[in-house]
View (cartoon, rainbow, N blue to C red):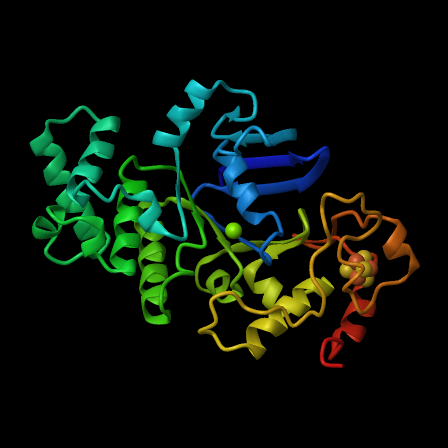
Length: 336
Ligand code: SF4
Ligand code: MG
């Protein structure tokens, strides 16, 4: 497989009132062409900030990429000019968000907005672009596309708006689509339809996808592999199947349990893990999960666990590195 994205030691900091918050702390990601990667974690884990950094859309100030490299399609995005980056954003990488209404212009018809994007990328007459817009709406499963083109965003349901956003994001034929919780605001049936659509598009067009989500069910449906993030760091990274068959990080166990114990209709699931993530503007020593981890020992509070390959293609950042030890202890630790 051909490597599309290679993120090395990505670090993003936000300054506020004299203190610095490390929202993303040395994250590594690899993605091959046509591959789908899930980035999963609770709110505040740094998953959205990671995605925003890949697009070089971190608001600065107060935010800044302070370290690391983003090798994408042959160059390091951290080093290129804003002008070059705009080109990347328009042509090679695009992003969709949780709430499509804020990304659409309420006073322009949906058709005009799609046509504008198409014409920004390809030399086309308005008429040609309009024909292409109809094709794109068809492609994302919007019925009666000719009629729909003349309608305004508020005349679309949430699910239909997200389909429009996907059409716009794909208008430039990107190599990478980043989706930040694109189904979270939708009801369960529509969620499933949008995931199916993304799966089909991925299979037919070979677009690589990074799916940002708090929902392991979404990862299971769509992703080849997964990065679990906690408090700005990757704590576990492996194939989706391996994560389900043999999760190794205590935080992942908690996430998996929370998905089972809370109904799937919940929009933002409550963690089964008691406590909350640490304040990243404070200086922290050791494992960021140690305050909530039922298996923490002294070393966990003093030494940062490195992300290590403990099995083939299975990376874990936890001092309980011995697999037998982890497997023996994991049964029921969050049930107490
Ligand atoms: Fe828990 Fe220690 Fe592993 Fe952190 S390093 S997850 S505190 S056992
Ligand atoms: Mg988010």
